Length: 283
Image (cartoon, rainbow, N blue to C red; front, side):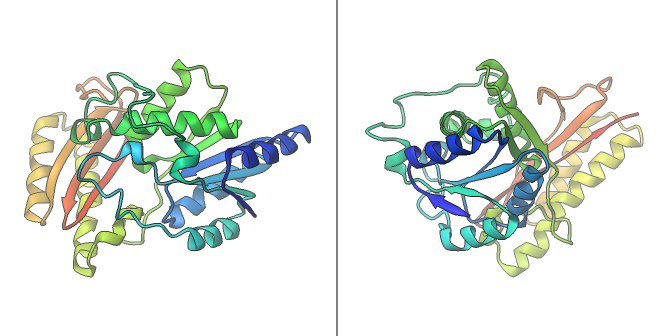
C-alpha cells in the first residue's frame, strides 16, 4: 500500500490506474480505525479493482467545544490496518493541504431539510462540514464507487442527496454496521468509554432492538415507544439526545402507514456521544 499526502500525488496515481481501465473504490475516514473501517475496505474490493482510503480529521465538521483537538490521530496503526485489509492507496493530507488559505466560511456545501433534525439539530453546521469535505475528496479521488457505514445513517442519507443534487457520477454504497459480540456498534469514539461504561453502552443497541420488535409486532404508537426508550436509556446511565422512528428515505418522523423505517438514536455516556440506528421493513 502506498501512502501519499498531497492532492497532486493522489491524482497522479489514480490517473495511472484509470488509464489501465481500473475501477476506483473509495473509503473516506477520519482515522483511528477499527474493524468496521477494515470491513468497508474489504467490501470495496467487491465493487472495484483499486481501493483508495483517506484519513483526514476534518475541522469543518467539528463545532465549538467538540473534540477536534483531542480526536485520536493514529496514522501508523491506521496504515497497518488498511494494508492488512487490502487497501491500495492511502491519502493522508494535513489541514493546509485540504484547506489552503481558506477559513471555515470560504465555501459551504449545504444540504437542506435532511440536515436539520437529529444530529443536525444537536451539532449545528456539522453536516455542512461533511458536505464540504466529502465533495472535495470526491473531486480529488474521482472514484467510481464510495462506501460509507450505515452506523452514520444520517450522514449516508446526506451524502446520497448531495451526490444526486450535484450530479456526481459516483455510486454510493451503504454497508451494514459492524458490531462487537455484545452488539455495541464499533466506533472510534468507543475509546472514550471506561470499561464499566463499555458494558453499559450495549443498552443503546438493545433499546433499538426492543423498539423495532415492538413496531414489527404491530405497535404504531411511535411517541410512546420513544418515551419508553428514553426512559430506559436514562435509567441505564445515558443522557439521551434523540431517539426517533423515521422514514428511511428522508428521515422525517414516521407515520403508521410507513413501511420502510429506521430508528435513529444518539445519547451521551460519560465522555462519549454514541450514535446508532436500526433499519427495517414492516410487512
